[in-house]
View 1 (cartoon, rainbow, N blue to C red):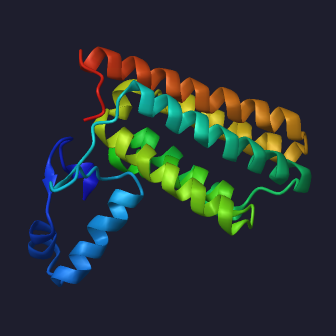
View 2: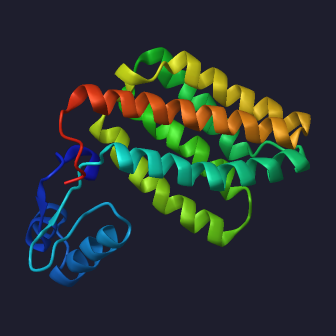
Length: 202
């Protein structure tokens, strides 16, 4: 839902109940969970709203991802095993990059990184990463990523990560992860700067 709702839009329990045909308690629990995960913003005594992610948010998101993903990638490289789910997500990304399908390209990109961290086997890392990825997806929904990201470059960088895992070079894998995430972060920051003169989150 959030990827289709404009930043600043109000999300009420009543609107969720009506749109998804769920009970009021279910809608309330869903809104509260999204607030807890940073996907909605609520000020005291006001309805929740979709936050507008600014530059500070983008930098923090990608720096947080880097801490988690670099550690995971080192672990995967030491095992010299590419997770099958990550390979499948990469194949999906290649297909959508050729088609110019922005929505599914973004989903495949998120799925690729999610699969890599899931392969760590750590429930706490997976849980932390899932929250950060949720905000990343929200961010990408607010910035037209196909106009920012070069699909061919993203695909090449993902392939490089998979190759580095298979090589068993843990430090190379971590360095490629850093380069990939920092490059994406910088392009998103540049796009946000071009798109709006005010960089407040909400």
